[in-house]
Image (cartoon, rainbow over the protein chains, first blue to last red):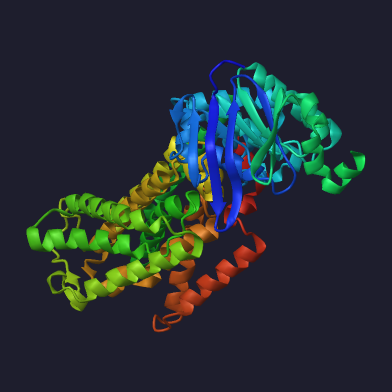
Length: 246
Length: 328
């Protein structure tokens, strides 16, 4: 890919006291791609995800979005630039109705509340939640809550959408709907970076995958190459298994 | 999910509020004795105060138990401006609101970095500090307080010795005004931001909500109207001292109607005040006025009962159906 990257991390480090969660991570996310970020537990995926979303600045390194240095910008400012996210543990506004949740997102760019409401209705239709618009968010079932978070993030009209394990914990049919939603979002011109555990679904969905292990980039490439990469298999299944099969 | 249905629902609420206000305005035709009129005035005043408190604590979720500070600032600004400089109470009222609003911003700047219980404790401590300062501030009357000189009845100086009715109508207007402000904010950018901040500040930030600014705005609006209520109270009783306008008890009295009626709801504070204030006043008179505290026991019992039976307040009694209808 030769197009300039939409998002770029350059030699990013994140330390928590003595623990190194991200070690010299440099990745690029290109426009209009679906990029998967995978790795075993504790590989530093969520940390990197949060660094990109702007929860906290990295200990060291630079994060660029659309060519602009956003390393020091907080989450609110990054949202304005076009980075939206979902949370690993769902965070809906439970005292508000479904549509009001989405309106909070669409107010980001809408000029008025009425306009935000129109946009919210449109997003709810797109995500298949329109029939639940008036329900209190606290009463949704888990899969609906995930979709609500997705809708809320979409409502901010992002260029880059960060999805943190949106397919985890869903039934196969729900997960399939999720996959469909991710694809349709990309078709609307939204670049997707997703962290995921469910490898089977993810590998069929993404254009490219980056594997993190022990805080550093272990491998990067097309899904087919990744699943056959010995280092990746080793990281997931353990050294012993790899030694045996080799 | 019609947008028109939503708008209709909102205007239906507005009509209901205007209807209730009109009905309340007719009450003095039937209620002639001063004692009951006094209760009506206090009920409306607490409805207005609690509605103001509800903006910061109910909608934005920043629980304040120090609103006596803003109440007192309103009362003191009006009374001091009038007695020291001859400024008419109407200007004192606006000035008091402005002073309280600015105070809320100045205090919010450091305090909104605190969360949960720590924030609540900060509001209590700050209000108590202000109370002690006023208790020792000679120019402002210190513990002796300020006696607002009573002149002839006039709307100009907002003083009425013979009739309570003017106070009643102003209190009604104030209650309606705070309700209307809340109603207007509900469907505004800040209205959505406030509720998002209350439910989940981290998620709100990820959606571009400026959490700090939301809290500051809620605090300023809330303090402004609480102070206007305080100014009104000073005119109503025409004597204030730190004990009677700035003690901790006021902070509780301002918060309780909303808690009882339904915190973070449009109708909660008014409903709560309508139940709570008459009940307390009656209890107080039955126990001969000397039983200071019995009215508070009634308060406590009532709040405990409601929070056990209906954690979402009296508004919850009207059920989901009613709320959904209005939210349509």
